[in-house]
Every structure is written in structure tokens, then in C-alpha cells.
Length: 258
Ligand code: PEP
Image 1 (cartoon, helix red, strand yellow):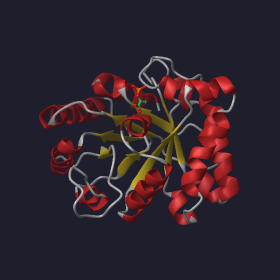
Image 2 (cartoon, rainbow, N blue to C red):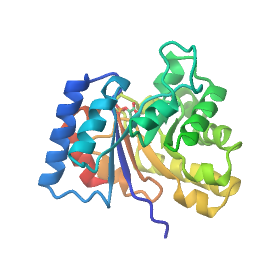
Image 3 (cartoon, protein in one colour):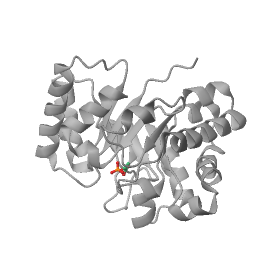
């Protein structure tokens, strides 16, 4: 039986300045300490804005917290005349473990097409971090009944040029677009079907070892009310949490249930 440590990652999106971020991390660490949270059983990660990363790093290092963190996006270029961009090496030097790549909000509001997403994944891997690759169908694709092919295809487009070793370091977040921020959470069966289809495709494209090591998260209106049913599915290895990750108690409860 493959052993994948569940990951609960809070995607703060464009919320919290660096002071609020610091306060949140302290409160979360206290709250998890109070319940003797076992970080070996479930990893808890936060994805703050770029402007809060240094503050989170300082706090995590000073207090030796077990909380990990990462960024919400990355430039595909290493350096140079790209005003406003942040490189993978810059993020790695801030202690980031993860970078979210291809979130549906980035695909929608920024010129991030498939080719750009592949390049982001490569940049993240080259800087020794792990990409959290977001995939998932819109309501229209679900209506047409092509949701599984769509999500698997999005992963496939990224992984087809990766080596086995690179693919094994990927984290996939299945986030149906219709579930993000809407309160319409996928059923556990829907999340499992997608996660299993993605894992089966990894097994076919690479091998069992890659398929068994990739953590596949579910994202889309996860709360403390629905987390335990979702996590009981065999191929769901944790969550990418948006709205509920802005509330310490909610996030701590989701982590305890995962
Ligand atoms: C997200 O944006 O990654 C997300 C899952 O958001 P929410 O939990 O608010 O649906």
C-alpha cells in the first residue's frame, strides 16, 4: 500500500498583508500545538502573497515551526527585464517548498496558457521546489460528460515532457472550476473518480512508482464540514483550500481531519 502523507495547503489568494500573515501563522501553530497535531501524519502548508513570504519564512525559522509554505505563481524566466515577475530561484531562496501552478484564476486573469504552465512547472522543479499543478473542468465540460478526459489531459500536457524523477515530484490539485469559491463541493465519488483517473494515467505514462508517489489533492469549497468524507477516498491525498484557509479554526480542523 503506497504511503503518501496527506497535504493540506491553504491558498490565501490575494488576502492578508505581511502583519496579518504573521499573526495567522502564529495562531495556527498555537492552535495545532494545543491539539498535539502530528505533522508526520499530515503536512500543513500555507501559500501567502509574495509580499508575505519573507515574514512567514522568518517566523517559521525563528520558532522552528513545522508548517511549510510556498508561492501562488512564478515567472518562467530566471532573471532580467520582466517587470513585476518573481523567479523560481527567488522563491526557493525564501524557503518555499511549493508553488501553485495553473490555478484556474491565473489561467483566467493572466496570459497563462498550457505552454506557459509547462514552463512554470519546469522552473519550479529546476529550483528544487514542488509544483502544485491545478487542473479541473468547467461546468460546461462536466455538462458534456468529458470532465475526466479534460482533467487527465491537462495533467498529461504537462507531464509528457517530464522525466520519471521530475514527474514523481509533482503534486496535482484536482479543482473543478465550478466548485472553486462557490460552495458547491464535489461529491467524494467525483473527487475520487478524477483523482483515480489522473493516477491511472500517471501509471500508464510512467510507472507504478511515479503514480504511487504523486499526491493528488482535491480543491473546491472544502470546509471542516466536508473534509472527512473527501479524505476517506483512497486517491485523495489532501486538499488545496481557498476560502476556508482564511480562518485559523477552519484550517486547523481540516488539517486534523485529513
Ligand atoms: C482554490 O481557489 O484553490 C480553492 C480551492 O478555493 P475554495 O476553497 O474557496 O473553493
